[in-house]
Image 1 (cartoon, rainbow, N blue to C red):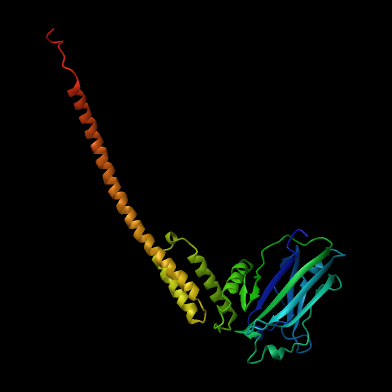
Image 2: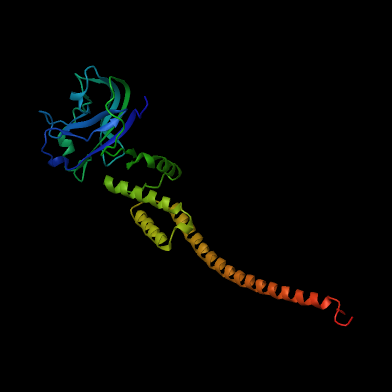
Length: 298
């Protein structure tokens, strides 16, 4: 298949407990040039259980005979743990008779709404869907387009963008203890702190010439904030100290270079003046060495 046939989608439903709608659907997203969406019944569907579906978006407008063989998993996220709850994995054909599939069943709504619920944090319910389109029969819907759904991946409880995955994976491999004392459960704060850490690393990867002392001061404050939150960042503190030393040496070097350039400029001017004097002296010497002329008397 020419386009990306596999995606991971995170759908965050805000104010879940106060929703009054019968059915709620995510914004459409595209996998393998086919439009999809996630749907749920916030109040249950005639029973007090949570139902979650993967649905072919705009399936009523598709031409007859369309079919899509799809492997997918739907998960309701336990936001106080890296483990997921109520995940189902299936491979099904979607078609005109079955445009939606993937019920997460036997999950009581009272577990979601419980006072100490691990699924609702600050009123938000997070759902993750992993979708792989194996075969498409019929015409593709669209080309890839921008979706309002943010695709993220969960790594040790941190929701990361695909572009952040490689760096964070290397980071956790080299420093597995980095967040062992980081106890913040709020997913937005966890993601925010990790983004701050990645931004700080990106900042320190610049050359000292690109950074100001103000930048280094702000980096030091950010490092202190993350350390107070429970991150173990001794290795990063050493890098920041190293950068501060390099910045100090750079500034001292710039001053010394400027002094030498001024001194060299003076020396060059003196050399130029001496060369002029030298040329004059050479002319006078040449005249002194010339024989006298008798043309005026003979």
